[in-house]
Length: 244
Image 1 (tube, helix red, strand yellow):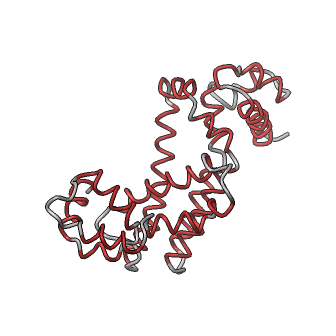
Image 2 (tube, helix red, strand yellow; image 1 turned 90 degrees about the horizontal axis):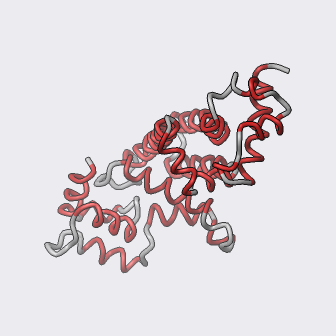
Image 3 (tube, rainbow, N blue to C red; image 1 turned 60 degrees about the horizontal axis):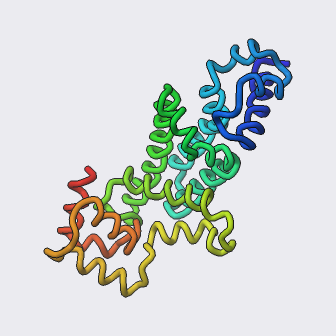
């Protein structure tokens, strides 16, 4: 068995155990037994349990980012690029659903905050945000995405929507989980057409709420596409100054 095969064997055993139990209850001894290797052998591949979990949860992440980078370089229209990118991200999340649910648990968060794994996790997250932002920059260039909010901020909102769709809407009707609906909500907002016009017209009002909360409410009303919002100059300037 090659070194990579052995590493994959340990990670497969770890994934089964981590997916079925609580993080603090699973020991490296259990993982070694499940993988059919000695504990010493396991430590040749992973520094500790945190490192093992992180590498197991992030398996395929580099390939995902490379695939998204390739899409940025393609000449396809923005609408096709962003939808295809979101499909790949959702596929990655769905393949690790139980592991990502564990990462939301209190005991894992406590363990994560104490080690170097947190920094590695944040670096991976920043990388994914950066790739999404590059695609959204294409949308800005094509006048498909509003210019008043930085693409990195929009990428964070979009990633949060995709996580919610995968993690929290498992029991929702299939129609409510369609990726096309998520993208429509992201690009056009949740308000009805008339409500979106009102939200935009109030953007320049002296009574309009300011700051990050105002930007979030504006995104909810008119979405990331928000072509009409380019007319609401005062609101654009407030959003941009907060996030630039």
